[in-house]
Length: 217
Image 1 (cartoon, helix red, strand yellow):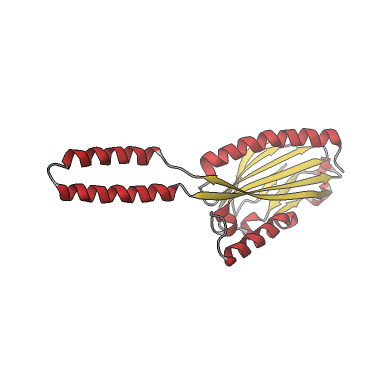
Image 2 (cartoon, one colour):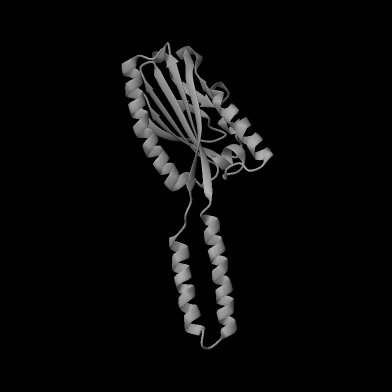
């Protein structure tokens, strides 16, 4: 079992790391399909691994499931994500045992306002300028404006992401020196994992890819 003080320290660290990572993920990575975030935190015998991935990478779509096929894909993905041993392998000498796995799906609203607002303003200005001279041109401009509104509405869709957390106890934490991930094998839509590492010995950030799946701890 976790020692209380170790768990508190790691949980506190992960809270800070997760908040920073999720904020960065929402702002920069949430719609970069193929880019995943992974945070690894270790303190004494406690080890936590957290992964945040776009819904597109995991199930092939980012909207809430609508069809039977999409519901089935979601159920299968969640079951896969809960099997930590299929996705994360820790060097055996450390004697790490999975204590808990948690998978949750989050949704957020995606907006691109400035570009469309400026474009609409320019379109309206141009339409007003030419209205008295060429009604056909005005009609074309109005049609183009409607197209922008449709595109603008499309950009405001709901997008989903997955947050996965694995909690381990390691009997020989002094021998904990690396882990590897099989994420790319199970979710081939992903092509990069931005990884933050916080351990007793180091704090670092690396990028993983299908050819580089090992994290030194």
